[in-house]
Length: 401
Image 1: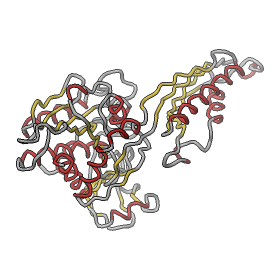
Image 2 (image 1 turned 90 degrees about the vertical axis):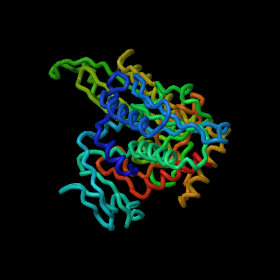
Image 3 (image 1 turned 180 degrees about the vertical axis):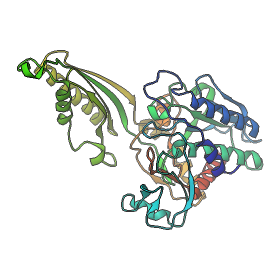
Image 4 (image 1 turned 90 degrees about the horizontal axis):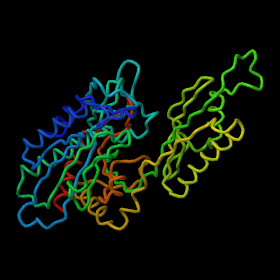
């Protein structure tokens, strides 16, 4: 099966993850795709293809004769899609982009006025959404490219390679993708997540990340007699948000600049809850951002009374750069593999995270490769057909290097 047909078969599965679910995986449909992929890998001829009880899929391709002592290399992608936009009933469409606005439906379009980078895709075949759901290229494109590369190697036993492993994870989009990953079973010297964007991206720096849940406990009094008695939780939460640096939001930052991102805010006069995330590539600035939030909470408690505001701040993952720098041959291998495929490698910092960030701190150095997709987590998501085909070639080149 070619990479595009495989991708289209995978996006038919609704694998939206759910950050409020305590189960593993967070949604049962992820296991439906996991079981499908495990059976596919088994049918292709990979060894020990299986999905474990937590929804993680593993399979192995032994080395060709004479390459058994090569370092084992892994390729990893995630099966879930972001809960930010519906991942159910995806209706993908293949189109050749001829420039200008590309209508997705009667009211939604891809426009170069909004997405200037569209111009580099003129003349290319794209897979787009119908403007009502995300596409699922993040990261079913990566899954498809890895599986197709393994199929190619199995069909061409004359191509030499060392031991290879593939792993497909649930719940990456909600920060749990590495929670139950079995590094010992995977048994690789290093690995690559195939979970990036535009063709050629090669990433080994990512945000340090934390999440925060702020609870405010107000006192609701009838407004006619509330003077000097009411503590309005909604107003206190609003005050907290206005105390965050206004220039340090996703809409005002780029590159290595960090941010505070308000994700959800619910409140009435009595109780309020704010969810936000904190990001920065620089560890010292990251710690300073968390400390600023703690100081704001302390200030509001001094102002409104102890216990009025409660903050639960949890680290999510750290910048993998410190774990990749000692093994830069892993990056050089990927760069050469891209160049051999006629792709220009572009090293960029990830303004987010991948399973590879956490896996790097679990002892498995794991930089990130592009998939060929753009506009992830939204209805404007699309992926380039020639880019996906190139990424299959890049993965094969990494394996054979």
